[in-house]
Image 1 (cartoon, rainbow, N blue to C red):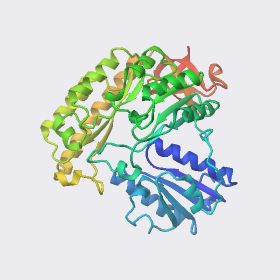
Image 2: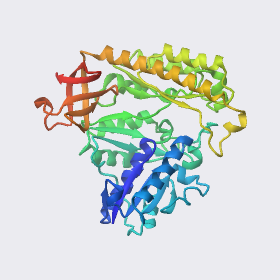
Image 3: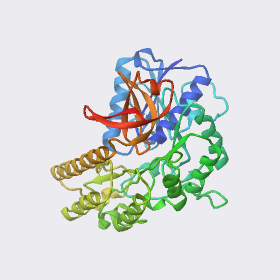
Length: 415
């Protein structure tokens, strides 16, 4: 059977799709790149925004038009909270909530063997390692907890074993999940994410680890020591969700574990010890009841902190969440203007960080090739181009390089 795989959403979803790929290939299936080649498709879904769900439904419809008779299985978060609309789409043979790779295989009529640790990501320079799933928080705008359930941590020994397998093929491993700062809370023995990171660094040689999205207030001293003292082993980069710079909005969002001031203090403390430092965040614009003053507080906080990029999202009402009961969001033209203002500020901060890094050395992991360049990522999460014919990078997956700006992008020369 020829199967097309497609993923919407986060790195945790990408990891889950790779687990499905490995299971299907082990059962004799062939993973293909286009609908024209496919007998079946597996689409991993996201429910973070209504725009994402609309794109998912459009993609499934296009599959059915392009390949009449194709059997599509929709899995993931949107599948877990489906109200019947996904199941009714043309070509959909099954809707499998969550990340049950065995159930996906069964839905395709593929023999189900034992689960195996994920060994590698197909055609990808970096690998994701899902350390936990689910979330115990209840942000009023987020449907992920409805789809993923409560926090469930993978054991340390299982993660070390899987990281060792991934390190054979990948020079960087990104620790991912739904709420990775909660890893270990459900395990016996006082485990924390910082303790896990140190264990991985000690037990899995050479590979560079990176944290995916993690709350700023959950970056403990052990994580900070590794980023500051061993940036070649734990990348000096955080994606620390902010969501709003207004304490009033944070309370309405149900994000009770920090204030804007507490977030700022933690980020400033990290930035004082880690250099270079890549810092990203998610920001939600136009939450129900957001005022001009609330928005101004967010802009001021973003201006004051050393962000190097932002993901700015207009608020999206999600079925089953509490936020829609808090009132109407601001008018669409107001939300559009606020979003544009924050994105322009983010662009300026990113450009300033790139400019500051020009001429310095970077630790580059090669992700793939596009045209005449290898595409690489630096320790502080900068996208960098390396000439495909550069002799100093030939046959290597991780290289040092000196950063130079050219043609509106960062390039690397021999260190």
